Image (cartoon, rainbow, N blue to C red; front, side, top):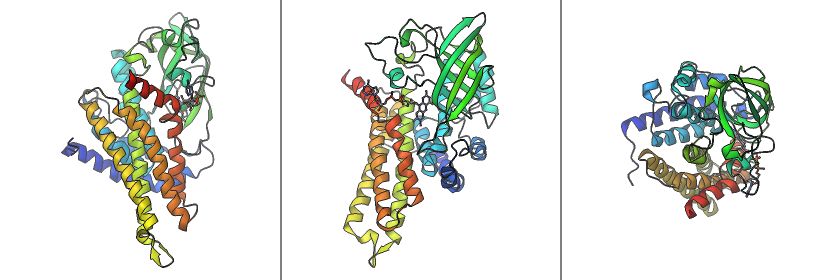
Length: 394
Ligand SMILES: Cc1cc2nc3c(=O)[nH]c(=O)nc-3n(C[C@H](O)[C@H](O)[C@H](O)COP(=O)(O)OP(=O)(O)OC[C@H]3O[C@@H](n4cnc5c(N)ncnc54)[C@H](O)[C@@H]3O)c2cc1C
């Protein structure tokens, strides 16, 4: 398979590399060290990245976006994540949902939401699915309990919907201007037949942001609680049919399972590149008992393994992205996401291990490992692995 990049792909990769090196990396550890999770976010980096196109990269050119292909997306994500994987994810979370506006919303909704998104460097997007008692059950509804899953209630009143309930862990929750929201509109039907999707701006009456969750990794990323108390959403903001959120695009409410998988795999690749670079720099300069670390057999073996795992992940990421560009049906994006969990955690652990021999508590090695733990919750948890495995066995 030919993985050589064309001129445009290389230009995006280089632009992302420069931005990550010059703008993201210098603030990464400082933001990570801030104790209050509400304070870790930095609008300046979002505005700077937005002006370079990193917020609007996937919106089609006819709407004023950049319409970059999946191979470019994967390369850009990896480069940004090498600077800071949580800052990279804040940008790419907007890719997921701006793409969804373009793919499933009506023309008038695109006018009302895509245009302002494109025009405003601080217009960030989110998606609310998870609730205090419904996480995995939304992604893999248990067959024996048809009523399982999200309970946030939506009732029609004239031209409006009245929403009541809470969402939790919502990415970009405290900073987004617009959310896609999945709402139970028929409490007596199973999740896949009783759920409707809405577009909910952050100034919706009756809506407020609750707490911002404190995480050990991805500290820049704002995971918040969204609270709806008789919140009023116009029917004009309904996306698709009533009770039809899960009925389109392969039974996935967003239809973005492929992008989500590629995103997490490519982001992990950036962390691996950062860990490997840090470990090599240490090994080439640090002496122990008079000898450079790089001349010790055990260190060579560890560095060789880090490189092997990272390059294996890179190959699968590029292959999956290339197949997505060519619309070749494949499970490789899902496999790359699951592989990424194992690889990113082993590579960052090996990096910390190397640092521990000479310099315990190296802050970057520590951060990279903490960030990698997020993959156990999002990418390589049992449910994600089960979903990929079930698609493979058919
Ligand atoms: C950084 C981050 C960002 C997030 N962003 C968003 C967001 O933007 N929007 C949103 O809606 N949600 C978001 N989430 C929430 C995320 O989707 C949920 O955490 C996830 O669905 C798991 O749900 P849960 O935490 O309730 O865990 P649970 O559902 O309680 O699962 C706990 C563990 O049990 C396993 N498990 C559960 N059911 C089964 C089963 N049937 N068989 C085998 N194993 C099972 C799971 O794999 C997992 O390992 C985010 C979470 C994190 C950590």
